[in-house]
Length: 334
Image 1 (cartoon, one colour):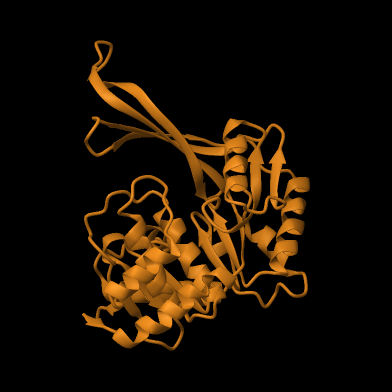
Image 2: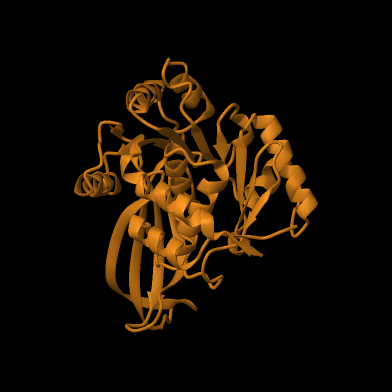
């Protein structure tokens, strides 16, 4: 493993320029709900714990955990909560469509513990829309995305499969002059290979395995071959494959793969929202003029910081700068 002290200064300059970067997000907006209960006893009705309700919180998740959002929420309590949180953070709301009868995607995590112990997730309950977005809503999303994209440095697509971000919507957005040259970064859970001509994608290893029908494991040549297939089929300029506690690897045509070990401890506290943090940081860095390798190094710092926090968390500019100061970027050799 080697460290690069010289590049730390370059990465610091990129982070310091984040405040000048504008990113348009087209994605599935998700409400992450956390319900914490203190363990009381075992139920007589079934072999399950009885929890005394202590607190509840709702935070933006999925594509909502990003910058200038373009997406859909329902006229329901989770949707209203998301809009309220966006207003509190002074996030522009003109691109967030409120649809009557639409169910806001909500992921409810039940956490259990004692007063002075760590909270552990017991179960997750997902609430999803029963119907697809109407053609009218899709057209409105395209118009909103075009409006934002004209004044943006990068376009982020966060496709969780709920319909607010699709290959068709992206293609319609990019038909407009002025948007075609914008770097487009993709995070697609189920249909990555249906997109073509985006700048970069950031799949995790299981998503790569599912897309190509292979098993990678610890096979480095197979990982490299998979990355080459994805770049060729999607016409990418780069692909970043995240590998959990093994960090991430950056691939670009004609360049040697860059294997970046995880930043910080591999004793992860909570992976909730880690992928969103990685792609948001990567996109901001690309928008600031960073190379794919530089953007991935910063995204790796951000991911390493956020997984040590409980719940759907974010990473601040100060935290990134502190990380760069205390730990120069490292790479593994092959």
